[in-house]
Image 1 (cartoon, one colour):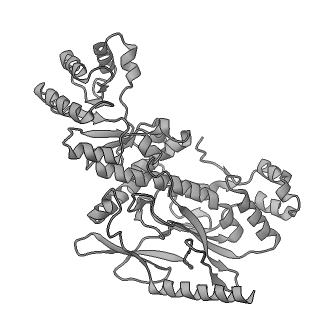
Image 2: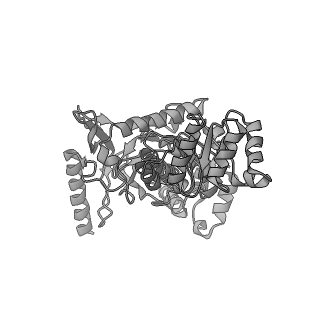
Image 3: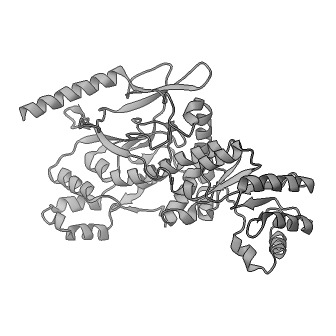
Length: 460
């Protein structure tokens, strides 16, 4: 689970391997640039949050083809006529390319490159599937977490979704991405150890039900965790549970509401705890929550201090995928550099290596983005893509303290969110959306490539 050593080169789609075989066997040794970006926003989203870069770079540094991998490929009918030099190539395979990327936690928009890969074309092709998978999932979850934490309006949100995630590894990486997207921590202890994320937990209804008396369950838990107990009070009757806790005379850190009328219960519980002089006991809410329900609860006056969000967060339930793509934008044969673009209806791409320039308005809020060509200059625009890998090696080695890396990403997101216009942070389609345009130089190159492609098509 979650390997940190070699990754199998078979973590890809078959057509990546067939194309790579074609490149190797035909001696097509061009250096290619691919860009990974999102074509359009998912439903009800106004922005996305970059996440997963650390794992993407780890993959690029450690992807290899084992002898067993190569034996498997040799036996496939697809490869019966492929020359042995391709399998020799795989045996020595190591990514040697350069990578530019958006730092994790950066807010970005459709059309803006999340990652730019320049490498020998077979290498760049073979890593496509895994890069898409890694960056897609964590960006999806970080973007969902951004909405949930925005709805909480400064109250802590803990990621609770491991048990509903699409597999054990998904639960771990969902916890990581949710932290980047503003969550306070996670219930997943493996993610806590692996990434240095704060971990939180309370108790399940089974703990209460395992005891003959509810008060006994509360007392036993307080005996073990005298300073950190958050007691679950909705197993039977919320009012009775609160009275039993007060009667014990031992103040917990908090109480949790997981079902029922959370709004009404939170108001009653807060009033009763305050009457007991327990003003600092927190009320924690969980149970099928998402950004919409949290927003309604708080707008209605619910007295809730923190939230636990599970299924809706770890699966991005309302919008479970992003249309992330990886497209060729430049081919350098050594003799000539050719910009590449796609012109099929509804799937148009722009050619050339790109940079994103972000502009800030007079009030300190981000005002617009320009997608330009790498090498362009906009004195008032802040370039967002930064170099992260050269010749297959990270420019910044992973630190011994993983919490420093992920905390930096989380802080970057929080800073970006603070600089976004209020309408972009809403939960429905913003009008107008955040302005993103292509530079005049990029538009000119796009037109030149379109004319060249049309000319080639006419000539056969």
